[in-house]
Length: 210
Length: 60
Length: 316
Image (tube, rainbow over all chains, first blue to last red; front, side, top):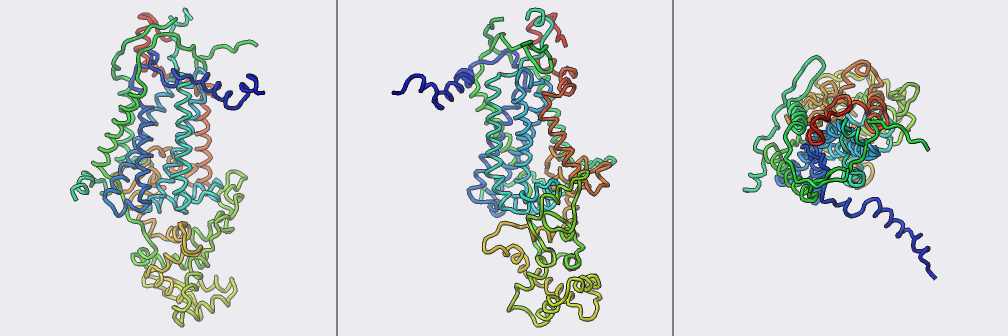
């Protein structure tokens, strides 16, 4: 006979309790925010996520017709332009967001993992960009692949990560690295929800009253 | 045909790039524009007034 | 257990103050629309670059001398790929990070034999379509020892109009002439990727071969894509490129990297170290104090400081 004790030890039950205690509904989707969140610098995080959504959406459209479509179709070329400028806006917003978070020392108060996931996402994005550039199937792709391979080879990574292999690079670009980028971004955003936006550095008044 | 005309770039940047040279530094003006805009956006975000909103009291 | 002392660069008093209404999903939606409009506008205004890819055929037609010189270099082991080392061959140890030859240690996992893969095997594949002179040249080549082949390759001289001198009995001029014809017909492009069967998306061999020539580098030079031109940051035409790679390419421009044969691994190691500093910044005393010392936060939270007390100042 199943007892209450057995049910409470189930993986599902324990996962539910853990998730709901870390992130109850009103923390996951709050209807308010602290009054100190009052600066335009705070928009660059959501701008980065929005640009990432555009990168993926335009990438999906490019995937419909394959990696050489954009050379022979003006609509395809336009979608490629959208994809390129999505990447430019993505990096633009992400780096301004990084600068803002640095000057806020946003890792304070147990938020180190939020900072670190952001940093790793940045590096993953550079890798995604590199694999994208070598998948363009044009002169730029040929040049970047033959040059970047020297740096990659010098670390030994080139023995398994072959920049000159279009098939491999394209699959890293459209499968592995987007999965990593989305997973890391999701984790990063969830952690902001769990921990909250970092409070300001303390003032003298607050210090005396605290 | 119309859509193809529409999606062609208005100012395609396919002409050879211009570069800023200073000692060993060599940066394209395209990249300089992007970097300057990033700094401008950052400073503007810091100094631009942010619209106030209704407040709910806390329990200090 | 004793509580560790409060460190303003690591710790923060959690907020128990006021909150304001905030529509998270609506903000996300508005941001998405605004960013989509921005991106669409940029794409409509500026488009994107698309410089046509080069082929071995276009190379051999545009600069026949460079093609023949490069092919001869493959036979004599003088090209970059012939002397590269891992992961393509054992010709060199590659760059070293101190005592560590990481590149060599990773092994030859993408074997490329410059002589066989770029010259001899494609010519052998012509089979029944070969001329009698090519058949004879290939027979002489296959029958010779490696030192003899190297002697022939080193003794052959390529001028502006092709092979200008070669010793008697040297099959290399015929091999180069036939390879050149194969290249200009487009057959060599196909031969270099067809070696693995019907389906292949691996362009290792044709790309290594093309990159061994000077013509390819000349095209990149015109677009400011060379390493010495900070090319890693640049895009073809006037488009903005990868400005975020500025620090990576910066190291290649200064001593000691710019004169070191180990520059690639040294720069990569430097960037891995700096990336580590970035990621582990929350745990690094001094570095993690920079935001507080810079006082830029006073701009970000000026409204908050104003509201929490007219006379208050950040205590730090």
